[in-house]
Amino acid sequence: MGLSEAEGRVLAALSNRPLGLYPAASVAVAAGVGREEVQQALDRLVELGLVTGTEEPVRSRPARREVVWRLNVIEAWWRVSDVLRWTPLPEVLPVPMPECLPDRFRHLFWWGEPELYRLPRDSVFVAEQILTCDDVTSWHWALSTLPCEALERVADKPHVPEDRKSIIRCALAKRRGAPV
Image (cartoon, rainbow, N blue to C red; front, side, top):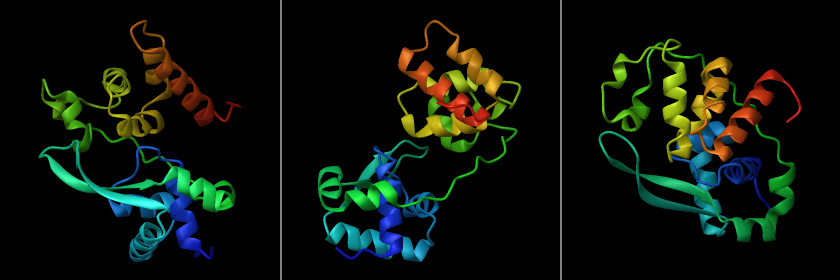
């Protein structure tokens, strides 16, 4: 099957995101392709049955629906496993830590006023709230942006689930350049 470079990169990027990505601009960033190019690639990959695009409600304020792009895992691994294994993806560098909690995480702090939390001052609290919730799409931001010391303190708390502690420790090892 002849896939373009952009299509291969989109497949590889989605293979690393089991919960999918939204909007298409996020797929473009993860794949390292242009925004116009990514939409053409997504349309073709849907036609080939390798990707699905389903409109779903996403966590946000106000509530909204987005097309969530996911790899059709069985079909893709059966038909283009070499593309998934060997296509290089761009390294996505972490963004600098903001001074305030980004608006996209407001739904995780529903009981108060998230704009009052300051970073890095409240980073342990913010990391704990994000990493103990079920919104796994927000975990990457916390693991790559918040201070390592805050993540270590969260990993040491007894009520944090063991799977989150493992994820935190792996992320810390990667950030520090140690073998995982």
